[in-house]
Length: 310
Ligand code: FAD
Image (cartoon, rainbow, N blue to C red; front, side):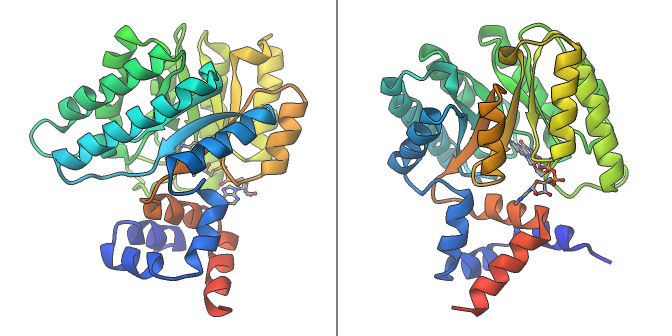
């Protein structure tokens, strides 16, 4: 039996379904909840608004799984344009960027990891030049070693480069221990991909327990933990652990996705917690959107209801 989540995540890789969903007029309205528009100007308007409300951002130019070098180069150029657009806002680390290495050619045959490193390096340089950082999103489990290898290279010159670890993976407790070093920025998430039992915890309870263990490792370490979750129990656990470890508010943060639990984002920020919203923008929103549907049955029901009531 396939779970609804597995089916949806499978659909995120099917081009014919992509055309069907994108071609539906109502989709735009639902997508707008999660995506800050298709253009850089639209994204910068959202950045100004959120930063004005005391919420930091990490911007994601949507795109993943490119199939040739030219597309990978276009991803690099989109990020360079984004950082050029951010420069005059002078937000420093309040506006950082998140990249998916699969958009930089990581999966291309014959040296994809090297290509991704070559193309992401100028993005890290441009980010450093305006006083901010890049975080490497984490994708399917098969890419973890390659992504951590790129991270290690980037951190030589740009030590603030961030990583993402997925609590669902069995290996993550060890990875968290290895990355709990001074200056290290690690976003801990549950994991958005469908992974087999050989590499990942399958039940919610097991993933949550693994998250709590990894969070403890990161909070006790000397790095900067980034708590990427909307789960109220895990966010309050993070607050308790940060208090227990005597962390100052600028030494850790909570990250949530644009459009999800926005009241909670404002409430935490008002309490003095450093909150960062993950703000995706661009035309290639399909994979991101389907993962958001897969995370929550209510999102899927809302989307399907919108389709039939048009
Ligand atoms: P859940 O138990 O799934 O959710 C807790 C509550 O949050 C839900 O009850 C609901 O109220 C709300 N909620 C959660 N998801 C949704 C949603 N889609 N729509 C509406 N409400 C929702 N995953 C990766 O694999 N790689 C990454 O690089 C990555 N980066 C991320 C960056 C950030 C800032 C965040 C917040 C998540 C990221 N994720 C990433 C996704 C993550 O792995 C989870 O799939 C996602 O956050 C849902 O898990 P949760 O911790 O919010 O808990």
